[in-house]
Amino acid sequence: MVTIQKFIRVNERIRAPQVRLIGPEGEQLGIVALQKALAMTEQYELDLVEVAPNAAPPVCRILDFSKFKYEEEKKERQSKKRQHQVHLKEIRVKPNIEEHDYQVKLKRLITFLQKKDKVKVGMFFRGREMSHQELGRRILDRFIAESTQYGIVEKPPILEGRAISMIIGPKV
Image 1: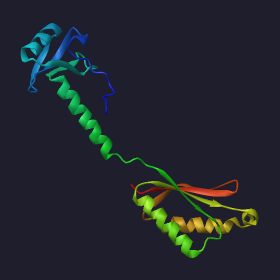
Image 2 (image 1 turned 135 degrees about the vertical axis):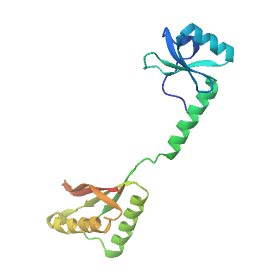
Image 3 (image 1 turned 180 degrees about the horizontal axis):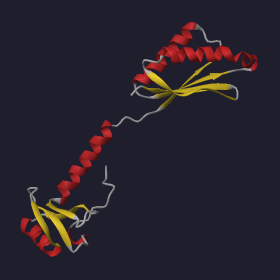
């Protein structure tokens, strides 16, 4: 269940002596005393809800609070549904990668970028491979060149210990 994060003052919980009042049909009723506003809400059999507490005087509206709360939760659910959470995916390669394996990894990289995820490409060196880092850099440069239409390099290739890693983000 989704809940409204901010605390909304209703009816007797409103502390301001005067409020700017909006009627049940959305019409402006002007600045009135709090007691008069509460009396008007009882006349309509609705609630007095503080919609803009930081205004001077605070803006209050005459409406059905349970319906208002339901509508706010519904809006919140809809906004969460439309959000895409960016994940960091990882692809690991070695400097002596074969052409077919390279194409498979490239296709995977492009798939991740099309799904709007960031991709960390890691090149790992073992033993004597450390003396041939230029081979690894060449492969990473090839990844960058072949994925430019799908993504942009957010973190260029950097040597960290026995690994070179870079991050490619999706194009916006």
